[in-house]
Image (tube, rainbow, N blue to C red):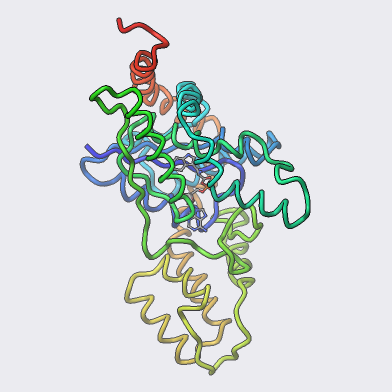
Length: 337
Ligand code: TYM
């Protein structure tokens, strides 16, 4: 069987980028025969970016409810909360001890923070925690703990997957003695999605505050958000460049090939931005509207979500506790029984 695994950081409200980049592909993957899926709420990762306990709790609920409302079969998939698996931080420490610091120095997120500091003429390390610096090691632990073969994510996570492979190889090399403990995971990216742009055209991201929330605020909020997406100053009747347009990029992530080709032609033939936005909103709603009621029901029953996550943790720990004992023996923390 193929193991598929992915996680979402519980520091904000799930948005279209999370949905198209991770939630929808992960649900599709889990529905295939011969796939064992592991999907989780990355709440340890959330502590790196967010020191508001209420926000973390709320985000966890929203992300879990979104995944389920979008069609996740929680009986089939192992669906859990990262912080319910104590073997993950334990493995993270083992991996930390074999990860070259130089590898982490190259991480995009860390480098971006250093660059920001330099621009502002601050100390390069200003505001950078060890959590941010070691972020990719924790992510490697998530993936390697369950020996995932495939990891469906958005394009922004490619480097983290490369680092995971580097770290796994290093551990295998140091401790394997002819036996590979870790599988090298492969990234799985939907070409039509890649990186979804946000309201301002930059990557849709919690950190840029440019996201379009999936369910928060209902259909009205969705429509209002779509109407705020930046466009150029071309008027109705003037031909528009579909490739360069964020509306087209977003539309493509939701529509079929035929629908996208039609939308593109319409733009090139002078469809006004206002009408194009209306079409985009309707296309997104076509997918999301059927999920709204269940999302609202789930949000009203945190106890049910808690039960589902607890059951998921039991399933996950059956594997992680056994594997962790093998790893403790591999590195010499315990004697083989
Ligand atoms: P996070 O929480 O930032 O994002 C969750 C998922 O959504 C995808 N995504 C996007 N895809 C397309 N366009 C966008 N604008 C966009 N924004 C976000 C992300 O690529 C991701 O797939 N480190 C991870 C969480 C994580 C994880 C893991 C993922 C922790 N451990 C192990 C996979 C495997 C993160 O912060 O994603």
